[in-house]
Length: 539
Image (cartoon, rainbow, N blue to C red; front, top):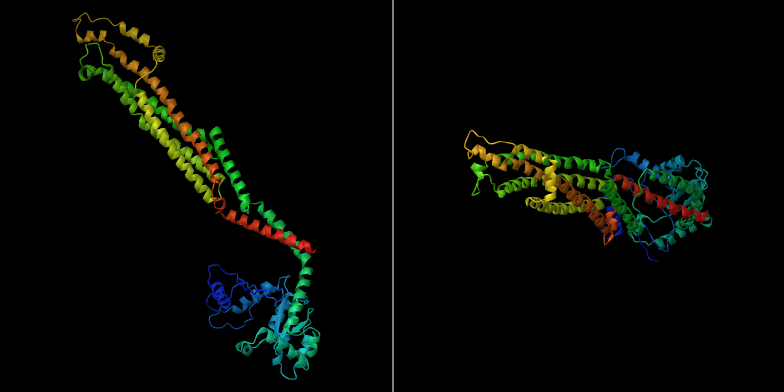
């Protein structure tokens, strides 16, 4: 059987030997000085010559601090020792030299404090070769439990001394020498026959004691595990469901979360309902602002056409005869006025994009609050999709504004508008004007009677009503189609594609304290469940 020793310390530490590893681990945990800390350094030894035990080597009791140690080092050590020996699941091994007064030993006194009846305490007497002659009877009194009674009693051992270690005396040789020492000892030889002497007897006894102690503790451990398990399950109820711990279950869980997000986006587009209110109620004022801008532009358009009409003779007349007007002059006025609507339309687009994108991002935050990587990917998709869709809408706004510059509508529509605006009555009013007989019939005043240019502003305003209605509807519709409806469809498609080739484990890494706490609780619950299963085998 191979012998393996392993320290449980940070994996980045490079070592060349176990001794150096132990020393380095101590320095990392307790500092380079002579202080202590509560953290464990675990060493696993596998060998055919060792017994199956879990030992915790606690520091020796210190009363006077040495150089570099804090003044309360003694209190620190006592607190550390009590932390372990007070546990009902432990067996306390009190190591006492044979050449000291057992009754005054601090270690034994501390053990008695947490284990008054001695049911968890086993004393080990060392250094029997240093007992003064004539004091062997006192040692035997201790071993027989007549000085400090212990239910588990005492065992005496003789370990290697420093000289043996310096001389590289092997463990096997030391064990042989120890056995010979007790076999040849006048006072202690009978202890060998009673299996109460040598480290070999101690190892056998400790293994037996540990097994029996575990058996006796199993019902209590089972109850404790049940209590802890119930407490963990109850605490888990305070946290939302998180991702599964098993990698093979993370894929379906990611699909479920993405589907929930997709459904929320679809519902947002359909009803507009969100945590910030109704989306459409946020969009309506922006579209109303656009409609108000168009409506207000009518007055400016009317004044512009009227001014052009009044100054036509002096500023715009070309080769045409009196009472005739050039259509292109008025057409250019319409083109210029419509062209000025491009920027307000683009401003409307940017405002709507901002509102919709904000709602999409809020929905992402709501659906993936604990998953920073997944949230980052989805938010990037939202930004990219809206940037792409905004470019499409800008292109269509340019196209539509250029279409409106064509100054066109079906004749029946224009005619109906003329009727609706009571243009006939205004024409009749115009035709009822009589000639000024006091002047020459060809005077400029009488020319106006034959010139219908005074009706041109009214006719163009009627046409502008058609332009107004088309733009008032088209701009909101094209923005809603690309920025909301199509963007939602594209976002759903991109979200669903995340499963293909994605690092699912990375996408579901949580970054919140609640997520870390939930993961810790799940791990604790799994450990407790496994412990419960294993204990049930032996009950």
